[in-house]
Image (cartoon, rainbow, N blue to C red):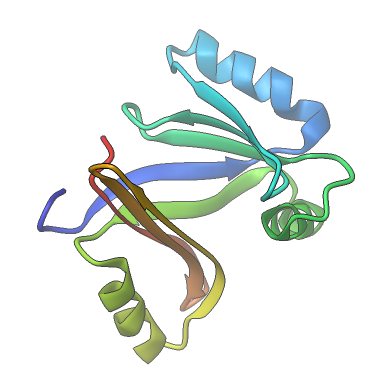
Amino acid sequence: MTADPKLHHVVFAVAPDRRAAAVQMFTDLGFAFNTAELAELGIHVHLDWDRGIELISPIPGSEGSVAASVTEFLDRHGDGVYTVVIRVPDAAASETVAERFGSATRFRQSFSGGDSYLDEIDLSVLGLPLTLLSTNVS
């Protein structure tokens, strides 16, 4: 983990019917995705942490909390930048800073196991979509 905050990656929300085309375009540009379906959250994820990009799409018909948020975003804005992920030493401490500026938390997740941990807080602050990420996962 780094002691200094830094830009980690950008997350694009993509409608389910355009997901395959978006994945193909970025793949043709040279991105290499790890793909997952996170049924509990209701989203499909295509992530290339090494190159700083993630594509997310709601699973059609899902009632997962993140699926609802992504669907609402797509309905309001269409495909686009959903959030910018900032890697920070301590997500909770960084959230406290964001709260001073009137942030609203949309989603949070945390897990640890073995030698790995991840704390992620997705929020909106000053009209900016940010995700605060603390992890030792490379």
